[in-house]
Image (cartoon, rainbow, N blue to C red):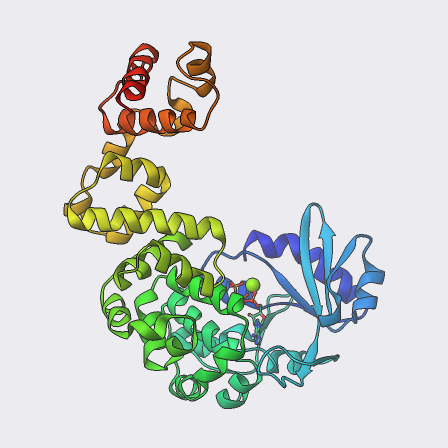
Length: 394
Ligand code: ATP
Ligand code: MG
């Protein structure tokens, strides 16, 4: 039993000694049984939110309308959620109403997949009402109850199934897979941000190839932004082994294989509501990828990309013959950023070479580019000479 559970045991005990039930539930139980590292420990209880709050000194209402209260305990926060059923789901996402109930069984019933519907009691006993343990042994993702109903209730579950298939290296059970294929279109009802999160986790999973194949096979890819236009490329990516370690690499791989220029890449990623910082890095990584592909990697391209994106490009391409020596070349650049240039605007003015003017930026850019290209040494006196020459040439 992992440490995270040990540390949270007093919370379970306190709730139980007040006469309620409390269990560990969700991903942490699943991952523990699968001997995978766990992150957050979720607790489910028969106590109502007000009853939970009455038991503990320090709580935060993190999701009180859904029955979730966070208990703060020695610097750790534990989400404690009241057993609940859900109803409504009028728009294929999130329930209209949650109803708090006292029955563990009702709470487990509303969960998405059998492997996520296990409860672990304080004494180590596992409640497994839907065959989650057996599915775990068989490496199967199976909807709790009728898959068609469950995907109709909440279409995000289809992306979650795909994500778990990739993360856990599991297969989706036939009826569940058929349910996804049948309801894939409902994914369009889901906020892009939520599909985005699941897609990223899927692509970073150990069997992302399988995840992509599932998205293609079930038509899910047609109901997320942009991917529908690139079926051939997606199939190719799905057939080729890849191992990615961050979000930038995911989008860079796709944009590169789709053959997108910077503008197209930005528009692609905006449709996925990707963070601007990520979009910038993807564009730089893709520019470098195209340069590598052409066999023409200028120092300036490496410099602009920056060290992380050089590594991103090398990882995405996964072709050591083409990327050999690139990281070393980056490490040996004369400067890594413009602050390392042994010349500033102030210095140029002080030496009377230029007055404050827009031309100052031009001169500094010229110096920066030529130092990176290896044409000018990064030494103050050399840079002064080069600046004077540049201005005279004009
Ligand atoms: P992770 O390891 O990524 O956190 P997780 O299974 O814990 O995976 P969470 O999103 O943290 O995923 O959800 C916790 C639990 O809540 C799930 O294990 C599942 O039982 C339930 N759950 C989450 N999302 C849904 C959903 N859309 N429909 C039904 N049950 C869900
Ligand atoms: Mg979780």
